[in-house]
Length: 242
Image (cartoon, rainbow, N blue to C red; front, top):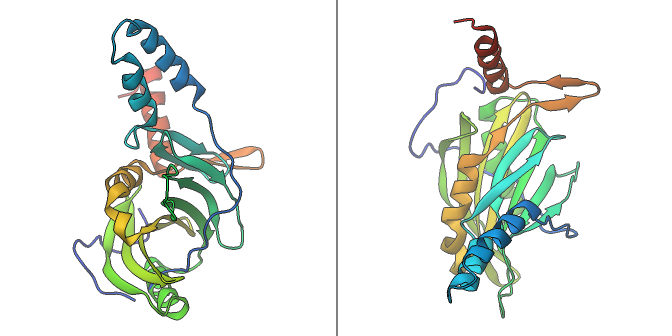
């Protein structure tokens, strides 16, 4: 858990979030294992008239999630199968990867979920205050609608929702972040206000699946407390230590 502060439920007024830069160059992951399984299932249903449409639904549903693992940053998250993956690793702003919704005809804004990992030497309270202050400082048009404590990866987290006018369009953001081992782990969802609710349930499922895992430091593996506990349980099981 982060720090020694108690977990609080409900809206706890604090003060702002960090400005989000969007969308560098594409690197799409192809879920080959899922596709092979899908083709096998397709052969079973080949004689049925709904077989092809069933397969397409299975492979393109925004609610079908598959794992995304980043061992360098020690994170794992379930992401939508049909969303594009953009690996960033921008050390300046901390963004490591983006998941971008499928392109829809005449859609001028593609919804995006950004995962960030950045160092922060202060306390959790100092971080939440700096988040809100950054929004007020850098996004003058921002209107905060949610500002409260929550949970992320079994740690106390900070949840924000706000709208901002950008290029004469209203964009809505949802952010959830936690501070662990002097690093901020953040999930940011950005969407056109009119389409914000379309993918919000999927984004919330992604956040629920988010895990902070072991990281690689040189030749050594540094385990999180959760990973250490799992390792201890496995050792006890193998050696019959109860």
